[in-house]
Figure (spheres, rainbow, N blue to C red):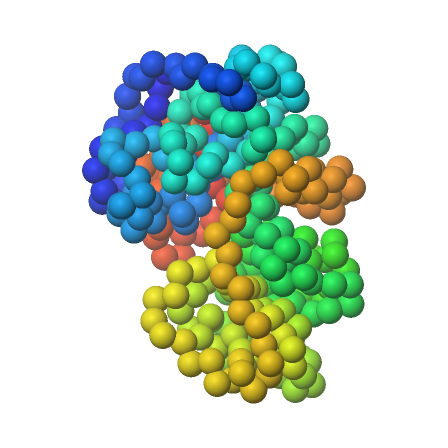
Length: 320
């Protein structure tokens, strides 16, 4: 099989397309012919060595699969060859999705939503699971509450807007002016241009000084550091970004706020919940660009560059 392998930690040039043996499913595993995968910030963080202790080299990386079951190992009962499936491979536990075939434990695999193409499904598995974990499991977002999504035009952000609207929340988001209409098309009730005004000032203006019940941070840095300033009393901050520097939590303390840091976990349950939203027309990933398996270095370079111009996700077409 063809696989894009990470030979060393560094820039996009660290990848090499190689021919490797097709994996064989063991007990409780399924072998999937990968039709599509996608690019996430986690992917370039792994590539540049942010998690070097957890990724033995050479490695096949990548964190999204949409494809078709080709074979099953002993004991598998949920799937048969020919089933269309989607999932996020176990992070930091074996080969990833940048290959023509992938083996996965039966318990993390879900049935692909029929309404989505393979490119769309591969663009939703990781970011959708992350948004679900953040807003539903950790923040406990409820009907009638308000949420601010930092980075609403990004991979996780544009899904989080749709998920929050499906829950019944009022949703605001921070984006550049060029992405304002896109964010509104995803369901945002209000858009804050963070390049033109201080987002905390905008939040206080829009909420009459109350703040939001939940702030979902997908950016980090100043967005995370000042999130408690945008919170209502008993508000919750949920972040999917590593803390790069110490945080001053005095404002959070004064509002009886809670903080949650999310590194998403893989299971079929979240995929089934997301599939139900897709079936009801309440959730659909936006594919902003498509590359081939051999073009993964170009896709990494684009996503990693400032102002890359991609809304939603960069998908990778693996099989015809």
